Every structure is written in structure tokens, then in C-alpha cells.
Image (cartoon, rainbow, N blue to C red; front, side, top):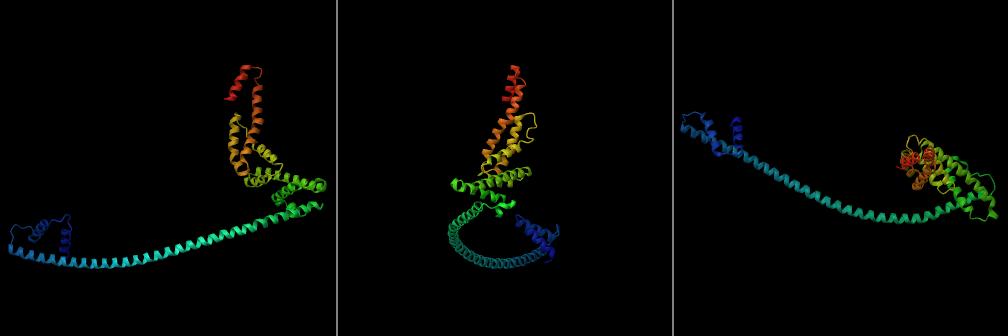
Length: 313
């Protein structure tokens, strides 16, 4: 069978849907060449040859089908074997994972227990070390000699010195004045000095826009007597160039909106600082503006009332 005939058979057999009568008619047309004068004997012989060709083609296809089925069966068997091995490996991995999870829980429990033990040892040790440092620095003030420890002489350790002097000040206030008046005076002087330096550093950080430094200072100054001075300095600085518009109420609202995120980042008590700012604005700039506007029309009752209405609305 030629390649042309083979491809023709394949095309005819692959027709969807396959019509056997149509297939035979097209085969007969090809065998007779479309002639009306047909030699029956010759046509019968050609049909027998074509039937033989179709049988041979069927055998070839069946052989390929058998080969593909065998290959598919082998692939299926190999796939099932691989799948079975993977299933066993997965089951083994799950068992190991459960063992690992159990081990991790055991280790975690031991670590937590060990952490609790270390903390129970560390806290008393830290407190004892803190008490020792307080005693050493208290002895410095008690000795009536110039302070020599780095914490009080190194400008870069200002925050540390502030924490220390605040604790020393609290302790000194509990001592008898008749016996420890000198050391109380020395601690008070150093307290005032460090507090002043902290306030200056806070103002400097504010001018530089260093919120992180301001937060560090404010967190420590919150325990100092002069903490209100820190708030006053902040509020005063925030009002610089804050009133440039014609409407003081809009300026105040804008200032509060601008200040609110800063307060949360800087101060440990942002709501208290905001209240202090609003009260300062009310008693200061707002009253000043209202008083000025009302004084301009105090001799004209109608104008005065109109101004009051405008300010209120």
C-alpha cells in the first residue's frame, strides 16, 4: 500500500461521524475512476485487494494498539510502585514530624522553665546591682568631694545621670535633715543642674526635629519636678509661626492636628499634653484675639454684638 493510499484510508476512517456506506461509495469511485462503464469482475478483484489492504491496516493498527496498551500497563504499574513508595516515605516523614513536634514541645517547656529560673535569679541580681550603684554614688555626695564618676562627668551620659540623680533625690528626701542636710543640698544642686541640662537638650532636639531624642528625654523628665517646664517649652515652640492666617480658629485647629502625631511619638502622656496645649491656646492667643476684636467695637453695641456672633459662629 502506497503512502498516498495509506493517508487516504486514514482520512476516510477518521471522519466524524464515520459512515460505512459513504466510505464504500468513495472507495468504489476511486477504484473505477468515476467511469460509468464498469467491469464487474475487475471491480470485484480490486475490492478484494482493498479488503486485504484494510485487513493489513487493521492488523498494523491493532499491533500498535497492543504495544501502546502494554506500554501504558507498564507505565501504570511503575507509577503505582512509585506512588506506593512516595506514600510510604510520606508516612515515614509524618511520623518523624510528629516526633520532632513532640521533641520541640518538650524542649520548649524546658526552655520556658529555664527562662523562669534565670529570670528569678537575674531580677534579684539586677536589683542588688542597682542598689550597689546607688550606694556608691550616694557615697560620692556624702564624701563632700568633687564628683568623679563618669556618669556625672561625661556629657554623653546625660540620660543615665538623670535617672541616677532622680533616684538619689528620692532616697535623700527620706533621710533625716539634721544628719544628712549637706548631702541633701549637694544632691539637690546636682538634681537642678541635670534637670536644666535635660530641658536644654530637649529644646535643642525639638529645634532639630529629633523626635526620638525628645522621647528619650521626656520619658525621664516625666519623673522630675520640672517636667511641666518641658511641656511649656514644647508648647511655646509649637506656637512659633503657627498663626499666619486671618482666622485664629482655623490656625488653632491646624496646629492641634499637626501636633497630635508628635505627642504620641514623644510624650508618655500625650492626652495630658494636648489638654495643656489647648488650655494654653485658649488663655493665650485666643483670648488675645477675641479681646482685640471686641475692644475695637466696644463703643458700638450693634457692632459689638455682631462681632460676638461672628466669633461664636
